[in-house]
Image (spheres, rainbow, N blue to C red):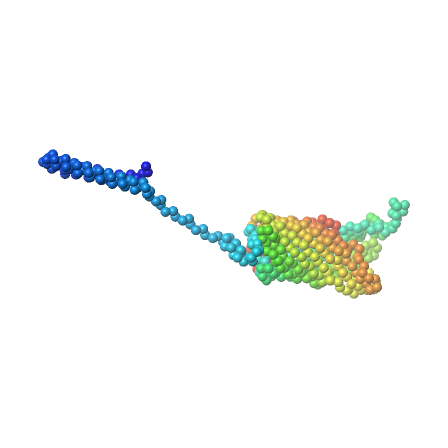
Length: 425
């Protein structure tokens, strides 16, 4: 039996136990004087009362056993409060068009990663930013020059000289980015170029031991670029963020056409330019796509692009200062480029990235009156670079982005080091 079945009977028996002595005493006092018949009558009455009480107790026990007491009411569990992330995801799901996958949010990318992606991709979460950048590229070229002929297919008779060209290009640029909407961004980049070239050649006075060199440096405004970036598709769990980038390059720099090459009077093998160019001299259009995919804790990014220069005419294409001007048209070769990279967040303010960039440049053609189109030998090129970058957020608004690029092909620069300081308003 359960303990609850004896609760009521025990209380009744206790009351009977307390009440019976008093009743017995009251009945015993007159029993001394009452007749034996009266005593027996009272005992019979007490037995009947006792039997009735026992029946009532049994009846109560049966009722208790048939209807056990209901369990205490259970309290409903507390209603979970919606988290900010859940609300944000709900709003995002409502904003997505029917049939389209919900937009995937980046898993708390650090400031360092955001500033890095600002360079490699496009971010639409800031209204306006200004960036001051410095890039130093170094080129080192050596060329063997033979002026003579082979005798007996083994002996060279003539002059031998080795030409070396060392070039350093320092580009200081100021770039502004303005986010018009959450899908559209405008940018303007104004570069200032400083170039220094050292030309060294052997064979002074027909000697292969003595060398002469000439150093030429120049600086001027580079080609200004105006860009437009439009987000075609936001990132989803199954699709990367895709942005269409288009830019127009204006020929604001000094063009390389018609620059005279001078000859060293002490070494007829050494020829050096009178001045150095800082631009292409042609209007250009570049378009392409950039991609970004978040794979926590890494972020993958890449791009493909195509650049085309418009054909234009120039008054002089020659390099001989003693010759008459040679006018003509110039058509620079198209450029095709792709890049792949990966970025990691080391902490909240620092990130590390590596990337590879490949560029293919077609042959340049010039057209002179009466000669038709002519391809410039050696104007096509293939450049490949491997880049390692570190980004650090100095404050909530100012960051420093560093990148070291190492050339992998003969046409690429030996190395290029860039340092940029983006500032968010």
